[in-house]
Image 1 (cartoon, rainbow, N blue to C red):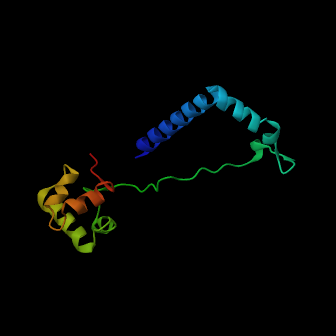
Image 2 (cartoon, rainbow, N blue to C red; image 1 turned 135 degrees about the vertical axis):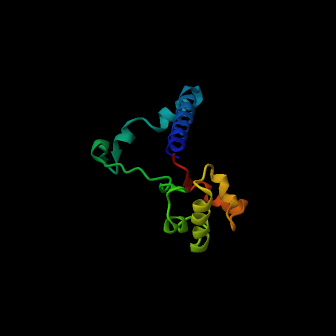
Image 3 (cartoon, helix red, strand yellow; image 1 turned 45 degrees about the horizontal axis):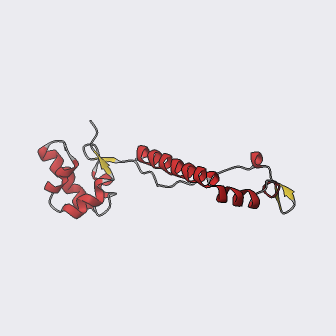
Length: 131
């Protein structure tokens, strides 16, 4: 998930830089930007000089990062935290694992009574199988 977030941030940055370069390279837009932002206006806010070096910047968290639950290691209580999985279904998952051995693929959850395609898709992004 982190790799996806980092990759999307890079793509957004590159697209933004390209659009900015195109805008400043265009003769009419360049003239417009230079006439609107002459530099003096950017250095003052309400008559006060703006010093950006002393302003703390806080970046927002775009995605709530929740650790993935390992299907082969999680107890009933952890499995119960999955979306749409209650204590009964969590017990079924743990019992299936005890009877059939460790999960090899996440799609094996479909073999557990009570987990259909919709429920599997709902919890797929929340679980993992570690080696």
